[in-house]
Length: 579
Image (cartoon, rainbow, N blue to C red; front, side, top):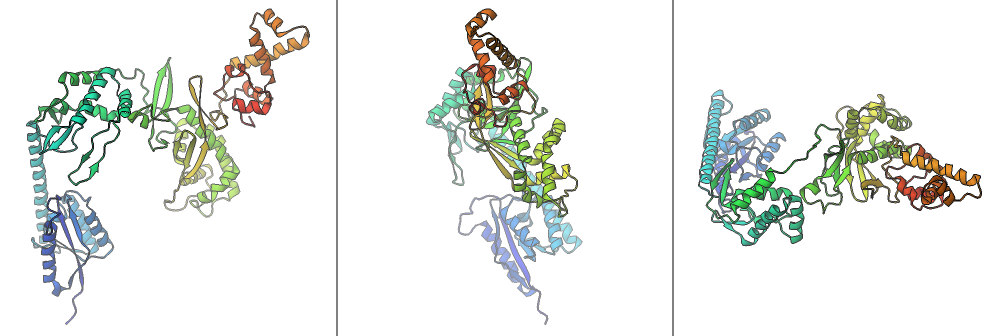
């Protein structure tokens, strides 16, 4: 007698809720026992039970986001299973769409599907029809159940009952009813009181932090403890909007009388709402979603918060910024870097990119990594280095939209710390840039997956000058020097007058600064300071005349005492050695 072919059987069990799963013999055990009995009955057909268990306790059949079913599918795809046994069909899925996808997988992998309590054979058309009918009823039952739950939920809300979820700050849940927590209620009352006095959630966040007030800490039904967190602006707005504090319950936009007791005066609740609704929005909002921001979505702070794009309008001119979401959510006072001028940061990053890509020593250090993504027939290193050095010229010829696309191609992110900036470059993007700049550099066939970023750290220091923020090197050299010249006419005139006054003084030995000031009807201090500007290093004077001086410099800086030595002057005014 020929030996039966061995069939490896896997049992899948599921229960929608976690209720009763902690018992010694629960619903999952009962389903498995029935399935094991069925497999033993088929032992003469070569059925053998696999030791692996596929149990989903507390997971709905309406979704495939179940750990055990995912593991089951993976094992089927790996060819480890021949038969799947369930207690009932709806244990595997209650969604007709998901179920049909699973059946397609079973058919592809030649896996049989057996329901212990609903006998059918999926090898025949009648069996598949039966299966579809049963599954349709299962889905219908699921939808009807969901509808009944929604109706029950809405009816309970209309009666003002608390229907679960995270309890609001100020209340505890006891016997499914809200009861006032005196300590937390004091925090909520403080929030309403101070908001009515100040009208500012931003300032209120700072006060709440000083007092050590936090959001609700609570324990879930699973026993997991959720600790309180610092109260943010969004938390304040949720509290001010929640009618639960005036003894009411909200459901889908309708307010019902609640079973619980409120502890906020309805008049204060309405007044807080009125303050929020009457708040005057920014009178000149820039449509930041459409405006050009070179580093949109690429700038982060040290804690991982993004910088969003924003703008203000002053005296008819729009100023673009990157604003820290940490400052918006928490407090501007506690955020080390609140805002960054968009042109300033973009100028610094692009200037550094220009310098980095045009430095052969840097190009050579990373070129090996980039070449891993290029075809073997790509040009040699020397040609690649020379091509990268042309990035400087290429950038100036691009339209703003194209510059933005290129920035996103090669920059993964920019992380701004108070003392440094880290630029993370994409090797894949660098290879793409090379391909655009030199068609000979072909990418490898298929999509390369290796894309570990190349990080470049730039030490910086933020410097405030004249109410504006600048980015400098730690020794004070201005990094915000843009390629576009910025001519300061008052500086240029001061340099010219300084030389003019110096010539007058040198031409007449008897002429002093005091006499010259009296003759020109000027302050002698002004003449002395402009004459002193003639002692500036030649490269500094040349930079002023060409509009290449650091953006942070003004004429006032040159009117103050400065070092005599040229090298010291360069360092004092933030010029580089080669400026």
